Length: 427
Ligand code: HAM
Image: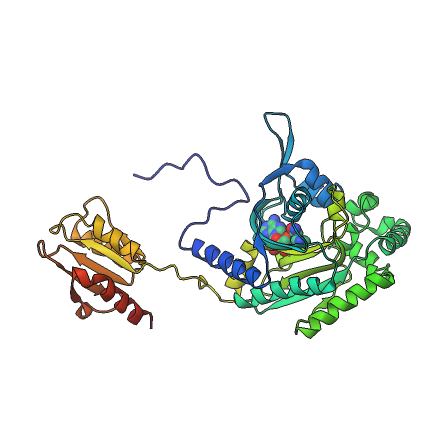
């Protein structure tokens, strides 16, 4: 009989991740944790929902994400909350609340929620690995953050990557540029795409981000922010580009790279993968946000960071032919119960406490059925217990070789014998 269709499935644009595929997630997250540790970061955990104001002020009411993609709800106490669409605003909110010693270096792994049109590489719930450094505007930190991203990406096997970099200026030069851009767009309003013809006044920078040919043609001939940088912003940008060159990282200046949130100042960057489809090819992006702490009620404090989509990183790895999980997640031993030696539970427990990854079958299955499960489990070794009546020897069988590799061992020497065999099968 066919199973009926279950009444529920994961919501549109979200995914369940089950083993063995989830091993890649574990591998990626622990590899990222290792990299952040090398650069002096510690893990930060913040709630998955925040007062809506954290995002209206943080990422900006004019940003597309805030206007079109937020998951906002009212709780039973009539408070307006939002599921986080990204990690930075929450981390900065936590900084303002707790005021840790600066420079504060925090890393995170978090789900993020955006009401997007789901497609490959674009989801309504995605997951980000990210870092933030709060409390210094030293260009050396921008370099470190970009170098961390680059080193991490390469360590997981991504090679077809390009770094795009830009500066958004800050304060006076940004304001002067925005005035010039607005004047320019006003004169070319009728040539913009349908959306931006009416919307550009809300946030002129968004037009630079627009991929539609009408907007690209107009903005190509207009002013770009990098040409308007004031002396300190120019010096900062030059120091970042110079510092990257010193550590062997080259980027391409990308004057259109204004990024989607209102908090960015000075350095912005993105890593794109040429192994992925154009529209969803950014595996990570970030930049500096020197005004964000104040927007969230804190003292003027600089910050810089980046976030990377776990799903996109995995897609890019697959596209580059890398499917290894980056982490050892194979069973060592499958214990098969021959049924004549008493309960196997205590033995299984002893092996697990000795540090081995051990699985067994349940429900009193036949020997043949258990061997089938053992074969499918991916374990390196099977341990046959109680197949020849009660006794103190057990049989180790190599599941990846022929039967001739069976070995009988007294129970009290079992852990040593297994460890020895496992070391050999790993070689
Ligand atoms: P973002 O560029 O919006 O930046 O997102 C960072 C990364 O998350 C993207 O490069 C992409 O890999 C992934 N991503 C974003 N949206 C989706 C989606 N709908 N589906 C799948 N993956 C997605 C930020 O969120 C900033 N908070 C980064 C940052 C940190 N800036 C400074 N510090």
